[in-house]
Image 1: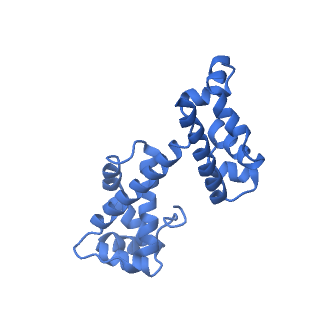
Image 2 (image 1 turned 90 degrees about the vertical axis):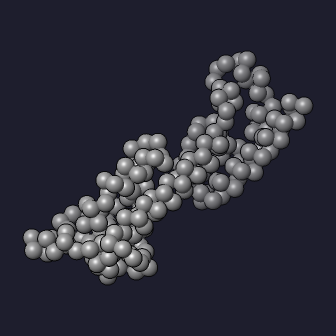
Image 3 (image 1 turned 60 degrees about the horizontal axis):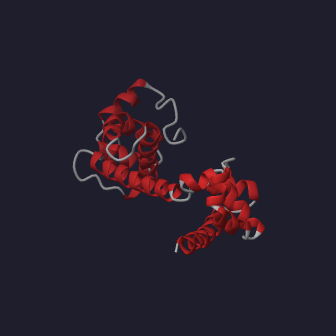
Length: 196
């Protein structure tokens, strides 16, 4: 975000005063022309309201900050297409925050489903009973190709992110996602068959 909201907004007090008096529409037009200081002024003007609003959607301060920053990055990228019909760009920013929050929560939910349930994860511990109970899950993982097995070990057992697993194995994140999805389907099928 620093790249967009860089430090030292203006070279003189007069220009800064001019920006703070500018309408949101004028600031958005200036942003469309590449004026980063205009985005900084909009950030100073609206970030507090956006932060309070975003708390309604996401659970942590870090997530709130990420969503608000992403909204301003989007404003910077799409400034040429933004129409400010009234006096404030805040409604557009709030809708953008809501959309980014939904995307973030979707991503988090998708990654949450990648983790093994607690009882499955405990199979990686020294608990002999848990290991025995989950023999079929380990057998399925062990029966995968060496690369798929490594992906499962990293993401499902060790809890690494897709990006970390991709970097470790020299794959793209997309390849890790595809391999993990296929392996999870196989493991789920084994679990379902074992429980019948």
